[in-house]
Image (cartoon, rainbow, N blue to C red):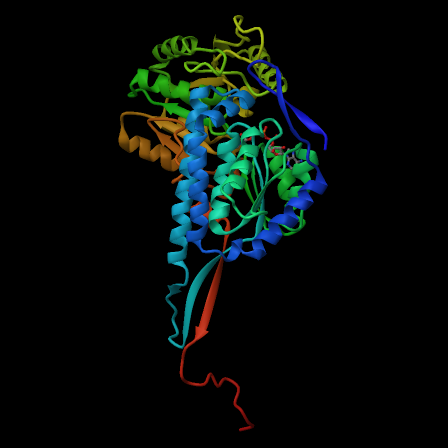
Length: 477
Ligand code: NAD
């Protein structure tokens, strides 16, 4: 099999290679997953499956430093963030182990009926072998958000990670092998989207495709799956807005704006990429934002105190620099950044960049950048801020910062998104559902919703009356 070079974004060096899987590999993986599903995994108890999930979590914890190192090497995120991701991976496997056990207890739950001759109970059965296609910004974590609930539900899996960062997903397969997960239950096929992802999304043998990636790719995948009547869950792009009111603590608000936009080098679907600041505090806010952004340590992501690493690839760097040049041309004000840092001659680094006076019609306000570039504008009234925040094709996340709890509640209710943060931005817990509206996709991952999305509800209805049903008389009247 031919291989794809792994280029480390911090050094631009080739640090390894991954298999370049294709349609035949995907087909073999789906066959293996189908066999494993019917051979026993789908009929195993939640308790049995939880044992494997806990063993996987244990191994992940044991190998935390090594996995975090690989993630940073492959993806470029600061090592401290990668370590956090690996903790979350272990936590997510443990969480779904708990839910797998609870699933056993909740089987055959009764449904109240209006007729006492019948009794109905509900079973929740695994969907079948599922196809999971994931993105590169949280390589192991996003894969875990799909793999852990799918396995907990009793589904078997074919995972196609992003070709941009597959190393830790291959390690996930190695860990599954180490803990003796039955063969065929978890299959990982690496490769390009068009060569491995497309045949998976068009495969008639999978019961569902769960996808995380760009809106354009998601549309293609949903179309291919729909031709086979295969269900899809779509976690797509975003253009999330943070609204800062005039009663906010400026220092706190600036901190969350920075965390929202620059964490994971700005490459988060839910990143704060639009910022609305109340005009009465704008001057003070922007002065502090400039200082904070310029104080962020941009360096080799493997250094423990690095706070901003490189973006994923040269193509991504070029795309981000294109956005910056266009926005300068559009007449917005460059508050800070906008260049590649001079002290780092190698690696795909971009300075934390903030534009103010960005107008709604500008490309930077409308399109997802997926890099450390923040678009900001001011507002006067709550109604105006809500209208501007919602005027986006995307609907993944939003955030509001204000000292007025009632106002925060009102704004949260008005946001047309799947996630709203109040007085913070970006924290994500595997216990709470994740997903968006509009062009940000549909379906939910994480929480109990994540497990439910890999289950099919079956009603089992029993006739319990001693009396004959007797609708059609046995002989002529
Ligand atoms: P992408 O769409 O380029 O690729 C995502 C995955 O799809 C990769 O595994 C890729 O190989 C595969 N793929 C590409 N073309 C395909 C095709 N024709 N058929 C099947 N599979 C194909 O996205 P990306 O660049 O990896 O990730 C960045 C995007 O992901 C951003 O838009 C970001 O907002 C989004 N994202 C969303 C969430 C969320 O939870 N909503 C989370 C992370 C990332």
